[in-house]
Length: 222
Ligand code: C5P
Image (cartoon, rainbow, N blue to C red):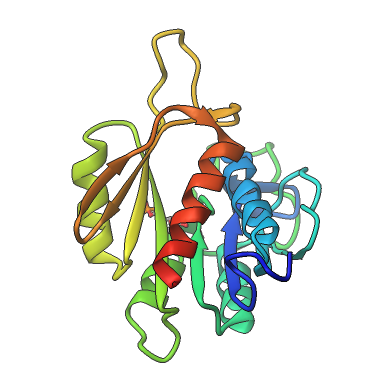
């Protein structure tokens, strides 16, 4: 709403995986449903923000009141993020592929022949770190996510400093006792790592996690 706590603010969110082409029919990607990022975009819009959602390839509907830009690769996502700036806050939820194929084949790689092809990879831009390192681009509040399977809080605190982020929202994506996983699931357990310490949020549906995060963003911008 126009009188919500984020009225007049521009919130930029990245979500989903990126797809890095190998040939016209194959790609490399991270596992990501996009659900947590879409939920954050939706929650920010509900609190009155102007929201730009830069989305990798996912099959989710666009939340009400959100301007969505669809991209495929990490380099496309980086360009779309930079074009959408300035923003009051950027929340980088996307599971960006760290590497892409160094050379993309123009035609489908064929199985015939002797040995399987060897994939040579090259590093993708780190979108979050790129904003964190550039005072001309950096939003006043810069937030990253860290999906880890072990030692979640230590890696998150390292990541916060290394990428120049204000907050890292850490979640444990190791399989739970039931053998399930947060990847693609409905619930999430997150820890908000800031310069001042760590706030542990209870396990909740992803839309409630999103609401809690966005309320803290509104408080921080006030
Ligand atoms: O290093 P790692 O991939 O674990 O960092 C995760 C955080 O960095 C997330 O916020 C993710 O969106 C962001 N990221 C990025 N560009 C990359 C890799 C990660 O923005 N190339």
